[in-house]
Image 1 (cartoon, one colour):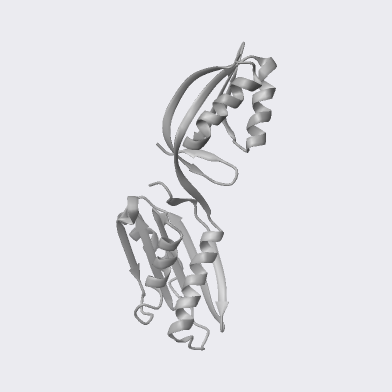
Image 2: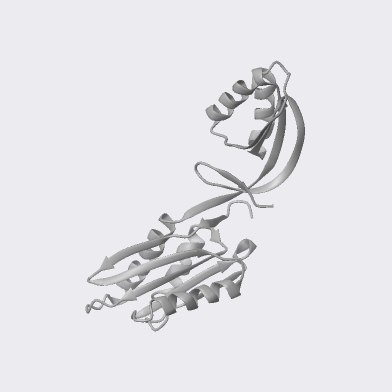
Length: 216
C-alpha cells in the first residue's frame, strides 16, 4: 500500500468545453457495491444530463478497476477517467463525470481531454491522503518540558495527535519510519532525557498537508 493514496473527503470539479458542461463528483468507497450505489445516486441526481460516465478503483494495488463511457464513443470517457485515478495512484475511490451537451461536438481527442481534466479538477477539490507506514509514539513529560516538545513538533511540522493533562503530560505523535529514530533522539536531547517513551506501535496512517490519521 505504500506510495498509494486515498480520498479522505470527496469533492466536485466543474469545467466547460465548447458550451458542454462537465461536473466531476468524487467519493471515497470501500467496495464495488458502494461504488455502484454512488453511481446510481449520481445518475438519479443528474437524470437530465447527456451522460454520466464513471470510473472506480478499489483495493490494495488497484485490484478492482471499472469504468463506463455511458453512451459516449468507446474509450473517450471512462478509460481516460480511470487513467487519471491510476496515474495519481489513488484507490478506494469512485468518480462520476456528468456531461450536459452544449451543441458542439468535441471529437475523440476533445472528449478525452475534457473528461480527464474534469476528474483532475474533482480530485483537486477533494481531500486526498497519502498512505504511509509508521509508528505512534506515546510520550510522558512534565510541564516544564512540555513546551520544548511542542516547539520541536511545530518546527518539524509534525502534528500532535493526542494530549492528556494530569500531574504530567502524555502526548501521542504519528511518525514515519524515517522520522522515528530522529525524533526520539531530538526529544531526548531537548528534555535532557527526562521525557519517557511509554510505547511505540506500528500503524498505517493517512497524511495530508496538515494532519495525520491512523487507518489501522
